[in-house]
Length: 206
Image (cartoon, rainbow, N blue to C red; front, side, top):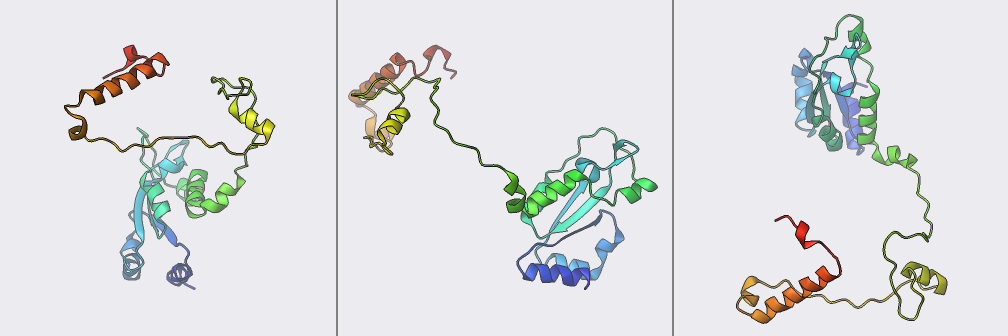
C-alpha cells in the first residue's frame, strides 16, 4: 500500500495523517502530492529542527523541516516553534543520517498532539482530605462554636447550606445620573468595604 493510499484509508476511518520531508525537498512539487494537500484539507507547517533538539557536533542544527498533517492540534503546536539560537551548525555527513531520527522533544510534541487522551492517562488523581488548619478567618455560624463552616457541616452530616443572595441588574448611567440617593448608597457600600479592610484605598493605582 502506498503512502497516498495509507493516508486516505486513515482519514476515511476518522484518523489523522501526517508526513514530512526536508523543507526544500524537490518531491514537494510532485503532482500526486499536491493534489492531496488541498482536497484533504491538510495543514502545512515549516520549522527548523533546532527548535526540537536537532544537533550536529554538539551544537543546535538548523535542518529546515516541513510537516503536512490533517491534525489542527499538531499544526498549531508546530506553528509555535520559533528558533532563538544565535548560532547553529549545518546538518551534513553522519549528522544528516542521524537527523533522520526524531528527537525526543518532537516525539513528545507529536504524541501529545495526536493522542492527548492517551498521554494524559498517567496523570494521577490527587487525594482529597478535609483540612482542619486554615490560614483564613474562620466563618462564624450562629448557634455553633466559632469554627470553620466545612467542619461544622462535617460534624452534623450536612451536605449543603442554603444561602440567601441578591441579584440586581447593572444600572445604566442614565438611570442613576441626577439621583443623589443612588450615589449616597454607592458611597455607603464603599465605606463599609473599607471598614472591613477589603482593600487599602491608599494603594489603589488609577
